[in-house]
Length: 533
Ligand code: ADP
Ligand code: MG
View 1 (cartoon, rainbow, N blue to C red):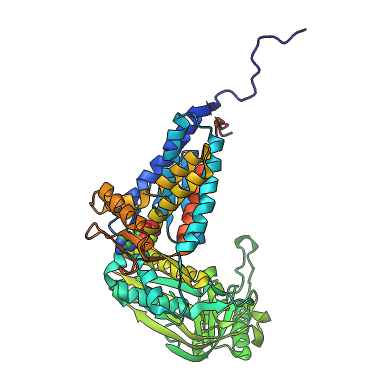
View 2 (view 1 turned 60 degrees about the vertical axis):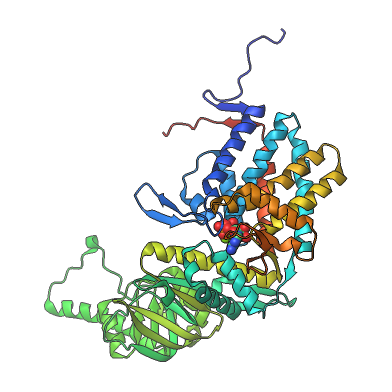
């Protein structure tokens, strides 16, 4: 019996399959669509986007990763590009738009080669070589920054915040950011600096100008005491953190207690009261004068706490409880009766402050002096969120710059330098990979191109001016980027536009990685999802 002509079906009916160039072009166009969606937000003249979700909540931002997170992206290749932005954000906190635009451009340039029948494996090999070389070039054109160089660190913060709404108060905010990061920076056992971002919290509250934001060396908990008669200020705070309700377990409805005579009733209540009293006695006996509870606090307990001059808070978020534990050295206890002296944390003061109409707890003088909070103010929720994002970006870049001690100029300067050096390198590699390296080199132009375009400057002119400047190979030529006011190529260090080396390294690395991943796909098999049972 020979093989029949009947086709062998291995995939479920309804499965969609794209193969070869169809699959490639489909993926590439989806990825390019993502890149072009964020393009107009790049740089100081980038525009904001208003994103509205299905329930009508609005986010206004020009932060690449935020835009992409809010967009409901469906296409699998497009999703890969969204991942690039997320990785960039996780690794360095800035350069998310850049990485996505670069990835889109690498893919666009690859289509020229695919059209000319260059095999994708040649393209990916060339891109890999180009990326390795790019990393080397970037290191060579970077400069040192010392952790004591506050002025330069401030400029790094300002460059990261420039396109955000805080730009008008960049002096104020960059001071704050450098102050914050310098407070938490530490050395590891090998003497390397590291910045633990968990030590820097941000707490937002609408109702004041953003310039009224400030740093608190300690924590802010957005809660009011359980009783207004509790002390407004506790100095020399001994803090208990309780992850259990200050309540007597409620009797279940179907386990009703039959109380037949009035004395039984009063003894039942007395027992409950004693149990609650005992909790407060326990708190008092270990010497705590402030209690934060993650759960509820019975009214009777509230009353006894207040009577004993103990400040009490209820229903804290888990994350707040953990932050207090970390900052004050307290241990979170699951059962009040197991609380000991050793579980208490310490702080100079817990202070009840009125912010607008609401009270907030300010915990200062913590055991861990590296625990700090930026109290973010702004007129509306939308402003607050964008200010917080800008501060987070700035904190990250300043932290990264301190950790690595290396910076590069911005405004397209490193990208143009890379293009020129990679072109030279391509010629030295030769073969068909040369073509791919040249495409990679050319793709770098997209950054100064887009910066110019967004500023209403003719991008072709900009690129020509930049290349001329860089080709001169004068001492500072490699720092020349595009001045978006004049449209001229100028030394960006003199213009105070500086970024951490790691932002560029990571942006180019992850752009190359995702572009290659997408280029290697030549078969997309989309299974039809089984209908819900
Ligand atoms: P990303 O999400 O990639 O960080 P941004 O919108 O923050 O996107 O833009 C970053 C780009 O803007 C970088 O290439 C940076 O060098 C450039 N840039 C920042 N400040 C200036 C400036 N004053 N003039 C020109 N370019 C600038
Ligand atoms: Mg940025």
